Image 1 (cartoon, rainbow, N blue to C red):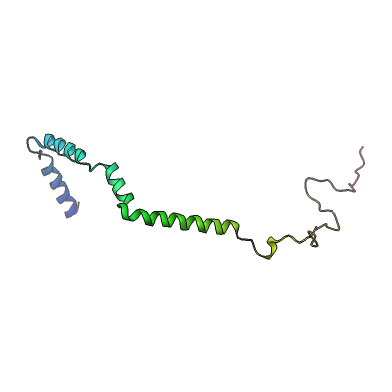
Image 2 (tube, helix red, strand yellow; image 1 turned 180 degrees about the vertical axis):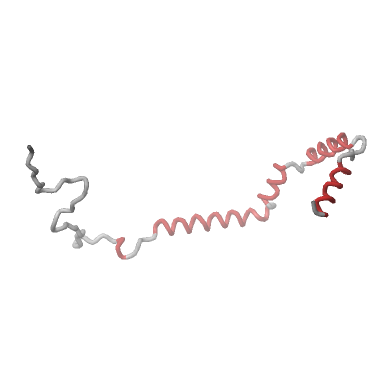
Length: 116
């Protein structure tokens, strides 16, 4: 066993006999309740961080309107020259000259095997 491990074991043996002072847990509970009643709860903390005060609301409103305007532009923007429909243009239809053989369709000229 090396030296740091021995030091850690010695420290753990010493800490095993330590105890908190009398009334520590009662004081902790009282301090916790006082902080809870002062408004330092997580809900109050979250509200203060999100709102940031009344002056910052105008920035949130402005950012929301800018986002809505950008979204409206993106959704209404045409997709380029192909977006306009031209009546004279016909869709291209690809028809192979020979049928494609696959495992689903059997071949047209099956080889006949004589049966005994």
